[in-house]
Figure 1 (cartoon, rainbow, N blue to C red):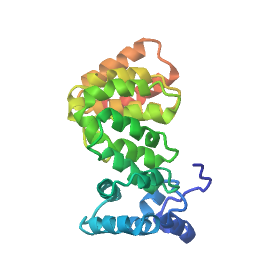
Figure 2: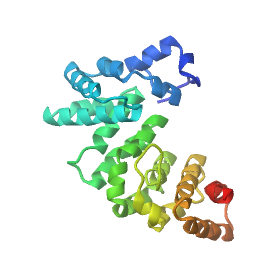
Figure 3: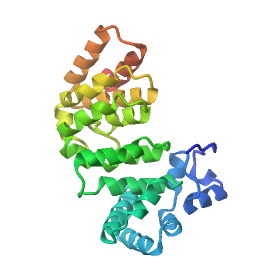
Length: 263
């Protein structure tokens, strides 16, 4: 979905008509400021059938001092429960293709929290969200399956390795970002913090990716790993440096070593 509007940096600077449309679900956010400004309660009432909105609002009432991330997760969790109980397959399809990125984020969590589907099927189902044109949906996509990644990291690597060859750079970026050892706003993957070698096939596949979006993810992955396994990061980047690195690889190496070089 192409959005031509340029976002503002401060909540107070969001035009009233833009905020109204965000809360109505008739436009999507263009930056983090707008994404965080959405009133999830209003959005629920404006886009969902009453029975689903009521169920979600009841859940949010008991979610004290919740962040936007926690709120979106709880909404997705509630909608998953309610649609399974109602055997309603139509709602998810509507939410998945909704114009509002926040609504699509709810749908991503409906996949991520669904314990009735296998890990491989869950990754395949989240792929459309990983390729979404909106930054917020792409972030929620990997957060939604993060706990499953932690539990199934060895099974995840061969699946994600295939994703590193995808023509869509958003999918390639997901292959790295979803398994960052530390991650951002998410559960750490302790096994990768201690054994980053597990993910080496992913890193090797992406070390010369043409897209900066992917390069940044690989560099941040290695920077995460440098906080618990600096020896691994030094060894990998030294190997890459010695093997006639491309300019893309050199960029990754420099950014990957930023924490190590501060010591």
